[in-house]
Image (cartoon, rainbow, N blue to C red; front, side, top):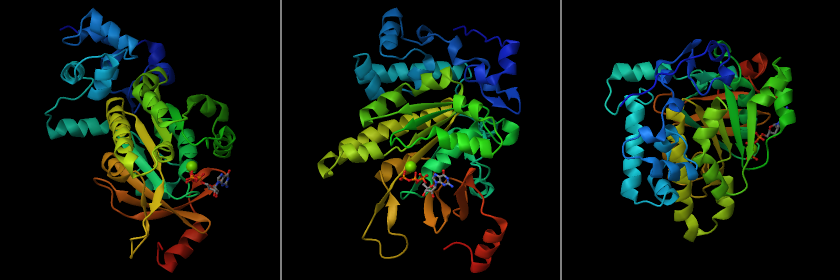
Length: 369
Ligand code: GTP
Ligand code: MG
């Protein structure tokens, strides 16, 4: 099968904000993105003819990339086919993306994985100490979860990330746009504006780079996540925020009898997010609430809501706690970060470091509490 090579126009290179969803690393387009998804047609996928392509488009799946990240169950319902056929279509789409070097191969050598990690970008949170905890900032190709009680700073981190993600890569940003999925109605453009102005950034540019999506119920969230790939490509997105992943599910699925349904729905959303983060090279940040578990005798009697489903799918989990005026962030789960903690504060800059004096005092007091 012949795949068409994408020709970059000079305009696109100069202005990555307008150029599809390319991976820009150190000012250079990433090799994997030289053939972009937009160059492939659904009918290039093995087994997909005009009729299936039409059905897919009617179901809102307009690109090979979107087909590759969809779930078997969803696709079977969307185009009214068996789960086996749905699985074959998805695998064929992924195979085509691999052959076109958009996706990596199933079996790859470690040096290739290392190369892929190099296309991974890190976005500063706005606080040096929180960045240190995250070994440089939040990562693309990963889902980072911040969980903690009310007022622990989850939404403030999200607001600050909106300002930071639009910054150039040389300034620890992602040089891309942000999609902010707000399920609690707590996004405040004025707050984002204040953070941008205090940090000396162009507030209007940042507001324009952030696309807000208000979600009202869990099925609505499922639909938005289903089409997320397309939104990401259309808006040259590098960061997707869901604040919060759990609140709607908690409100809608009450009682033990509904727990399995709730977990299944959450599971499908989270798996899709993991795949989207990897395939589109975007950072995904989700926030989560805590449950108090009265059966805990030692340590902190709170744990993340959403059970194992969220715990097993998030790449990194950070637990946030209030400590007087300040906040403590603790790395709870990560394949390679040390499980340490750090302090930060919330001020006009959004998330910020503690003043030098306060930090020293805390260190003398013996670190974290
Ligand atoms: P829930 O969504 O309720 O679970 O909490 P959250 O973890 O999202 O809390 P959020 O990020 O909204 O943090 C709230 C805290 O941030 C408040 O208690 C304030 O201390 C601080 N905060 C919020 N807005 C501002 C602001 O404009 N300026 C300053 N200095 N602090 C703010
Ligand atoms: Mg919040």
